[in-house]
Structures are given as C-alpha cells and as structure tokens.
Image (cartoon, rainbow, N blue to C red; front, side, top):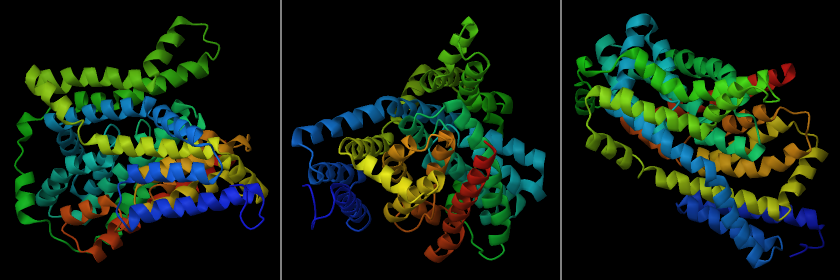
Length: 453
C-alpha cells in the first residue's frame, strides 16, 4: 500500500507503524492476549500494510526470531540455572545475612539495596524477588523495621540490574541490536546503576516507609523465616560464583582495550572466556560444584534443579523472539529508515528518544521485555544516522525507559502487591513511584555521562 490520502510513502509507512503499535498495545493491555502472539500478529500486519511481499514478511519474521534468540536464549537458560543453584544452596540468604551483620540495624536498608543489586545480576527480576522475599521478612522480624523500608531498596537493586546491567536479557537485546561493546556497557551500567539504585532504594524507601505502613502476611512471613543459617554456604564463595560471569566479561573487554590488535595469545584467551555465552557457561559449571556438590547435593538433585528451572523461561524467550520478529520487519520494510529520518529531522537527542520510546511502550503494555525489544527495533536505524553518540549509553537509556511506571498491567506489580500485603493504592505509592524515580534518575545520569564521553 503506497499511500494514504495522497501522503508520501514515508508518511504512509509511519502511519501504518503507529496503527500497528497501537493494535499491539491494545491486544496486550486491553484484551490480555499473549504478548508473543500479539507481536507476531503485529509484525505480520506491519509487513503487509507497508507493502512487503507475503513471502518476504514470513522470511523477516522467522529471521528476526532466529537472529534475536541465537544468543539471548542461551544467556537466559544459563542465567536461570545459575540463579537456581544460588536459590537452592541458600547463597542469597548468606549474602543478605552477612551484609546485614556488617552494616548493622540502622543501615540495614543500605545493605538490602546491595543485596538486590548483587543477587539480581544472574537472575530474572521475578526470580530474584521470590528469592529475596524470605530475606525481607526475616530481616524485618529480626530488626522490627518496616518491610517497606527493607523491601524497596531490594526491589530497586533488582530492578536496576534487570534493566541496565548485562548479562540480563533486556540490556543484552539492545546490545545485540545496537552492536554495542559488552564490557563498556557493563562498566557504564554500574556507574549509572549504583547511584540510581541508591536514590530509588534506600533514600526513597526511608521516606515512603514513614507514609505507608503495612504488615507482611503472618503465615507467609513465618514460613519464610524458618531457614537455618548453619546450612548456608560461605559468603566469599557465593559472591565469587555470582560475580564470576561479570568478572570474565570485563576481563575480555579490558584485554581488547589494552591489546586491540590481538597480538598477544592471552588477549585471545581472555576474549574467548569473556564472551557472554562462554562466561555464563563457565560460571554455571563452577556453580554446580561451588553451590551444588560442595553443599552436599547429589548429581540427581543437581540435574533436577537445572532442568526444572528452565520451564518458566519459555514464555519470556518467546516474547523476546516475537520482539525480534517485529524489529526485523521494521527494518526490512523500510520503516526503520523512515523513523530515523524523522528523528534526525526534528533533531531529538538519540538518548532521550530511546528512553521515550521504551517508556511509552512499557507504560502501555506493562512489559519491560516487550518495551525493550520493540524499542530496539525502532531506535537501531536512528543510531545509524547519529555516529557521534555512545551506543552503550543508548543501550542504557533504552533499558531505563523500559522500567518506567509499572502499574496494573504489569504482572510484577501484582506480585509485589501480594508479597508485601499492600492495597493497589499503596503499591502505586511505593513500587510504581520507585520505578519512575529509578527510570528518570538513570536517564539524567546517562545524559550527564554523555557530555563526558
């Protein structure tokens, strides 16, 4: 379809894209359709409406799914296994207990933010939440502090890592789409992420806990408080296991910076083990021993852990694949170039553009993953026309936007409401406001960093 009401081909494509995105949002948010199915339908519609041949549309969709999941599916699978070993071994509780003892009761909410940040590195947000809720209840019972004051910092740590720090799927999607440097993205994400988590976590948590008072569900709190600390693994080995993939990835990036020509054999070795797949594979194997066999689990139990943890990841993998299909159709149909021309003509800052696109889709669909995958396809062509912008910072801006304003259309919103025994109003005042603070503070820090880099 070449034109609508005599409009130019470019304008027509942009209109069809807008209509398709609106339909995608309505299908997910109003009619509660599965996001994967909705993304595939939207990709098919967009391709046909913008004039692509039916065969080419199918090719774009299958190519987009395959190309996107080539790396991401492996990252998700290995990351989930690593998180499962940490959960079953009690490693997360060991980290929390140690930091609480070191920080003391008055600064325990700061310790909780660090716990969320560290524990969140190898696991999904939802997994990290389920993993750390027992620690929130245990610490609240031991200290007598509000679960809001303790819980908000943990949620801020988990959410910051989920949206900004590789090897989480969200930033990895943008890294692949934008062809960003993994090591530099990790470095910048920590520079931006830590102060962001501090402001949205301990600082905001301390303020809001005085205004919102809740009591945890008694039976749940008692159930989660029964773990024996004598059975927990050591702090050092747990911390090393969790941070090992990040250490290996950073080592590979540093090697490339020090020896960009690759003249040294050590450089090639560090680049190899610093690849996200190899780093995670090494870390998972290490975890099988450090948090598995060393903790007394037998091979049957470890095999069961690593198998059963993969089932819940099927949905998120398919959603990411659907987002990849939509992204590829955007590119192959020429819509991506049209969006790039429009963004360039109105002279909008690419970092702000990436944040805004991801934030709008996040608010509309309730899914950070859908926001990240869709925004990556829209923003990628714009980057091609903005050679002076740091690609790594655009990755972080897209991730920050995908965290903005979690509300009633987000499954995470309801998880937190139930676990913290809050009303909808209280959840909006605490969790939703925290996500807005986190997203906006991260954007401000990214923009400030862009003036330096």
